[in-house]
Image (cartoon, rainbow, N blue to C red; front, side, top):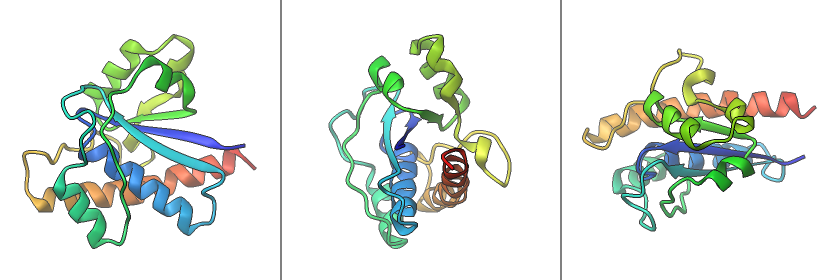
Amino acid sequence: MKSKVMFVCLGNICRSPMAEAVFNHLAAEKGISDSVKAASSGTAGYHEGGNADHRTIKTLRSHGVPINHTAHKITKADIAGYDLIFAMDSENLHNVERIASDADRKKIMRFRKFDPKGEGDVPDPYYGSEADFEIVYEMCLRTCEKIIGHIMKDNE
């Protein structure tokens, strides 16, 4: 069974595309790309149709993680079509839950629920420095590892 995962932030140019790229890269490294696939979206359409932030791209490339991304605003159909939906912070969690059906709310959670270093929000690096993008990358790496482990365990 293929598991489809969606990562969600505000504009879909920093945090969620980084999580998507890291997740898909890890899945490819583990040889499980046929079993799991991630996508990302934003709760606002500010950047719809655009690329990821140049600092997101630079950070990912510095770690050898490929990215091919076009910003997308999440829809009710997206929520229905994915098995797990991870909001990068509590505000976006609330925004996704608000448009989700009652049945779909159970598969929506905060991304850092699986972070071994603790729960909480993934800070938005948009107004920060390149170092802030590196912090988000490290969060994505360790959390996506745990999410993949959780999915694979559930699919055994």
